[in-house]
Amino acid sequence: MRRCRERQCFRQRNVPIGTLAILLRSAKAGNRRAFLNYQTFEVSVANTPALLGTLLDILSEQGFGSIRIKHIATWRADTQVDPAQLLAMIADIGKGRLSVKNTRKLPHGAHPPTYIANAIKFLADRI
Image (cartoon, one colour):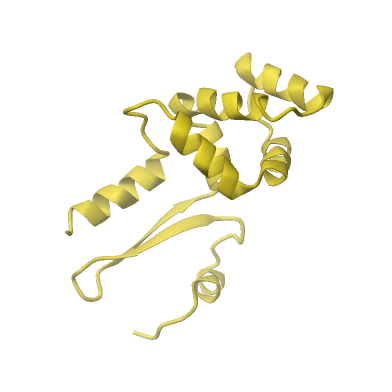
């Protein structure tokens, strides 16, 4: 099987550019899986009820201006998270810093977005 770079493979298979994918290759030769999601990881976290509160807590602590504080408050009030606004806030924090803060604040036993859980299960079943 011809190997290609991840981005090229996705273009050849008409996978949307913004798609987040976790590609795993099991210990068995040739047994590959792609776990896709049509949103970025951060938007998936925001759309996972068990993880949203922690994400909003982190955003609330960042000292954003009044407009962003209003966005966060409306998201807490059970309004759909606006992906563009969320990603703009995360860009200001930095994905790495957000990840560290998220790791420290997530409640014990919190589950990742479904596509990540499926990828982890796939890998764990083959170890």
